[in-house]
Length: 427
Image 1 (cartoon, rainbow, N blue to C red):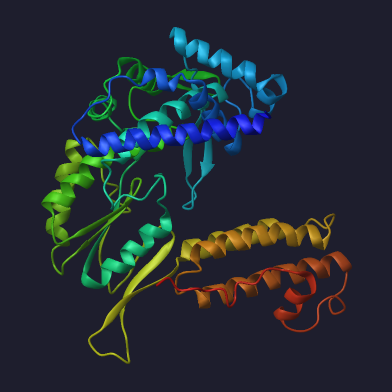
Image 2 (spheres, one colour):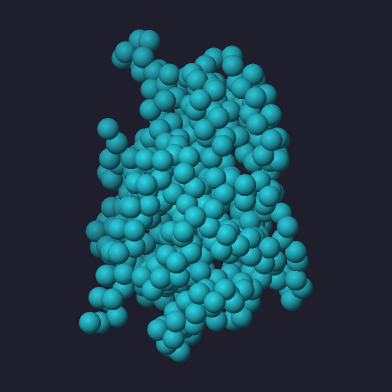
């Protein structure tokens, strides 16, 4: 049996385990599960966890070891060593390596990169405990959950906003960095009572951060970049989802991780915002006052890269629908990516440029193709055509010889992906 066959069989067994755990948790909403650590240490779970980490690749942690170096030195030995450390409870995580990635507003977001061994251990715990919490998570939560996506969150807004008038566009201040670890562990204990699993989660939360060779304590928050961090973030905000669903009827809360909007009846946004602040205060979370806005659905708002706006249908008086298209920031991001890919480097061939451009354009277009994006797609096509023709003229030292005709001629000649005509409205 090949290594791929072994991994496939392990993944199938893990899926069956997850289904059993999910069904048990769904049938008993208040049950806590106390015997989980043996499953975390099992060969099938650790192997499946490694395959997930291998697919995601990622940079090395503080130890400098990458997934490629693990593969070179022997995956089987690596997995057995980790399982042995887990079984004997001698496993200790190392601090995460801090890096900074640019944000759309020009600022930088801190990102913590655990070492490969810690990522695999976190993935193993996540595989076992995630079904227990998924059984209780609410349908208004869409971020970092199995079989849920940003597209579903977008459609939920379009489905609900035409019935509402006001919108709370909420932004939390440094959410991942301000999570109270004591409250978080209390919420985890509602489903997990195995002390060894709880100990692992505590170790990861308190592992600390290495920043320019200096160790920093992490007694607050959960580092962005950890495999288990998105699940812990959803666990922390689950009480908000549950409270809003039961207490704030007549409104709709749509949440994607820490990004959320609340759709309210006309004139009620301020009242609901007061209640929202009170509940977030109980979770020791702060509202980002600069980015949080109370707006009318007719004015429009941005969420998950989409600008939503309620508009009347001219041919049907009294009827209004919610329209959505790429936001200004999303348009700027695709222009920045195209400009970066095309660049001024003349050493590359046109074919190489087209391959890289097509990958960028397809990914961006697929995200927005179910929206009212026809005009935005035409603008992106024209921008790509301008940038690419400029690069070709520079490469061939010609102003007129290289390109003749419309943008369509260029797309047909060189196989460049076009977005025009690809909009497919969701029903």
